[in-house]
Length: 251
Image (cartoon, rainbow, N blue to C red; front, side, top):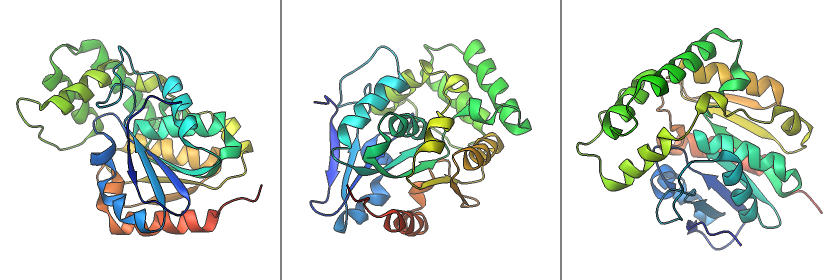
């Protein structure tokens, strides 16, 4: 039984498990999707290391994936944003028979994009940032990370405790190593959707590579934030179409 705390929205309909990324958490990442609870049972866990789930010394995407599998029950649609997309892909590869559909939003699966120019530049920039940054100065680390991604976002100062916790977790990640198991996913029969917002060229390269390898439908919401799901209605309409087309496989 998983120890993870989770938001649970909706009490009827197919199950949808939504996995948050590094600089957010369940309620914040997927608040715009709560409206879908009129037709789905949404489970949005707080990944290990994000309160109120248990803490951790180091983020481990494989451990996270195993914990997400426990939430799939007899079957569910799976959605992941940012690092949650990498976790979701690894979870789907662990238990493909329990996954009805997979949607990932700007996953930093950097090894999958290696060899493409923008992805290679981002891999190098991420490595350089981690090597040069002072991991104890959380505000500077986060600011530098956002600059590497090309995200124009001013963080509050001082960092509120939930964001400080998230940045501390981020310092233990190694995004240039967090690939997705593309071969296993390509063999899985469920439909896949890869979504981006156009703001980080390296993530566009990764998404293009994943769309070819999985294979997956590729959707770009030009001008959207990294957390594309936060645009709300337009994203929700596309997600709904994906979920409804996938349906629930017969046993």
